[in-house]
Length: 531
Image (tube, rainbow, N blue to C red; front, side, top):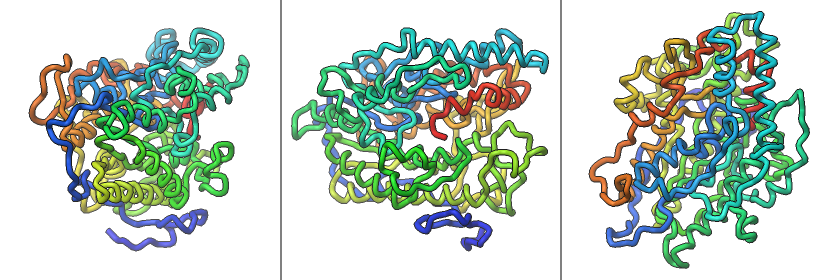
């Protein structure tokens, strides 16, 4: 595998500070980076807030276009295994499938009315019914029970908010979200909950007492961290999983627009889909400075996953060369590869995908250096390399192509409960039928966010680091300490994962039904607030 970057690997629009690479970055396998720090002794008091998380949709529990089952987010799964689930505070979203649009429930509603096969002559009626479903979601959140916001008194432990990037987390608050709300209109064309991101944030961030309305997620975490006094840790484990939305728009929107002036301005930054490494590092520095102010005994930093692995952008045309990670083009997974037209269909090129991945590699190197500096300062900070985790699960990039595998690559060993499933879950787009799942299983129906069992994989990796840090885990009643390696109960997650046990039978017609839903209803585009 050559390390030489040829002209064909470079996209002309790539900024100079992006170091384009020919080979994949080797992930971090030692969360401590080989730097020892003094650990809290066994006699140390357990902080009142055992787990606090700051992040985006990946941490909030977003799935199939909506945040709904926050009880099945990876932080909630960790809290369950910690024996602290009943005290773990998280936002709760009701209504018909949460915010902004639950694609799984939409497909199940259509299946209930039209059966497992949607014939062409049923499309007009299905279009009408789909619009009705979307209108009911819109009405619930804009004019119905969902339009009244809860009084969030006790600060949530899961402070993640979908669609937020580093700058949002540094600046946005309950008060600023409320200020952005506009009087909703019953739009018959663009049927999506208006201001859904602000509404979702107001379920997460504190609002009572009034002073808390000006707290960012970082400020809210600092408040939790101060609950044991000025010099004591109010938080036992703090997890930071941010940065994906600084690049995700490149695949959800299939447009690579590099950050420029205004990247750090809330009013201007949405025009960009991927941050230049120098811009990301500047914002990361501010984020790290704020995290240092939080009294947390252990801090775990996640790297940013390679967004080009997500099946929402499917490679077509065969690999560009033997041993390459990349396909010539990336387009929507429901576009027939035989009919794909680069001039007509939305796409990004192999060179653009490589540039985005290379930028993410630089993000991740910067995150590792933040942890390295902190550990050298005596702080008990750790790295969880989620980028490497996803790379080891990447089916079309590596599992199917041994020549593309870098020397460090090994397949991720799934837990036994998942290995026993047929087919074994993988990173392909999920397909199902009357007899169950046909392929996929790690990504939900929006092609970006994990299924419940995949959130379990993330939870297990977090738990592994927490145990390395000396965190004690207890039984569900919180009384009996667990000994030995703590394993996530994947049998429980399989039972709760409807996309694993009984995916919508409408998917038996292939990805065409999702393509129809996206083209006729804008379902996928409207449900993903990143492109």
